[in-house]
Length: 458
Image 1 (cartoon, rainbow, N blue to C red):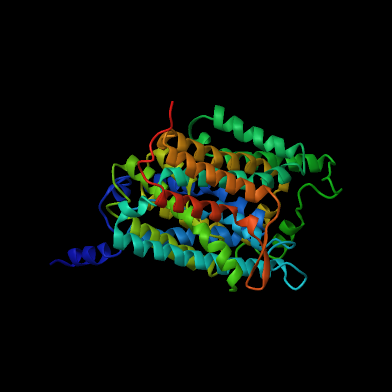
Image 2 (spheres, one colour; image 1 turned 90 degrees about the horizontal axis):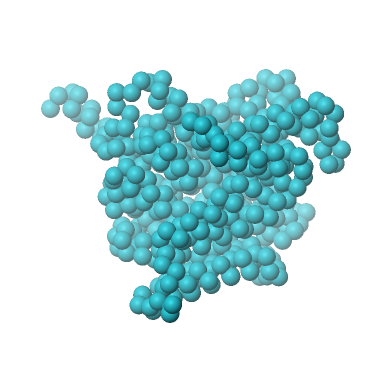
């Protein structure tokens, strides 16, 4: 065996060089790969930073974790799954409940915001363990049997509930400035409808940048925020420049563990596991490969997703998982290359190593975030409804029952009378756990209701 063959054999242990995900970039100009990698990161950027800004976490840590998590995922799947990791909106619902200073498990003056975030990170680590458990189950029973427990009649309403539950946060942020909020939304819609070429792939990013420029002009013209302060706070940016903090390590945060946040966040993994499955089914179909039943296989993708989410949560990143924005980009561009995704991950890490860039992100007015969230959360709910329309026979009584119960429980719990329960000597708002409760009920109903319930009469 030649030296080159030995090197190839050693490398193939860690990176599978066969398949569409690896051959898509063969013979391509390196500069073209770099540009596509930057585009891969930018498509994710707009939605990814919404999560840390909403949770008052560090966007610097989030971007750094996005890049590191993606590289770990690519390594563990041997490059067979060209997915970019990003902050989960489903888990944002659970984290908001944990950091709630009035009704969360750590309400009271004895805990700071950072204390609550650290306990939320502990819950995210626990959710990663659930991924590993699911991976082992898939390994034991097979992908087909496992997927029978999460049919579209369960995953569709789950996605709808994510968007509906987050909707009030978008409205509250949107209403802080009745010029910038609507303007952001209008720019995003215009790009989505009338954008040409590659511009059409960046509606959120264009909306954020465009509205930010208008906010700057408004401030220069003498306009103020509702509280009389500056519309855009440039002081931290100027301070970062003055201190020379152009590059530097992110403000890492270590997890803390308590039973209540673990019990609250672990069930949310059901939603992201379902998203992992759906993303790989969709991308695999576009690639002409079965990423769920063949290489890399559902067991490996769940294992990789869980491991990377745990590792990046260990230094302060909100829950990382496969991302629908990345799936949309792959379908639009047809560039199914793990090399391109890896390049995008490197760009995310580089941005995460700039405190100055993080301060620029933090300076984005809340109303602009609300305008972008308006579309993001609405699109999440709409995608869930489309999933139901395309894959669920609404004439089947079993599916009607499952979706009816899930929607009533998920919406009713969240917006009905607050439900307080004692968990680990803490009073917790059970209504803030509407999503995992609805999913668990959906899974149970799908398992116990007979498949031949029949169709409703015309």
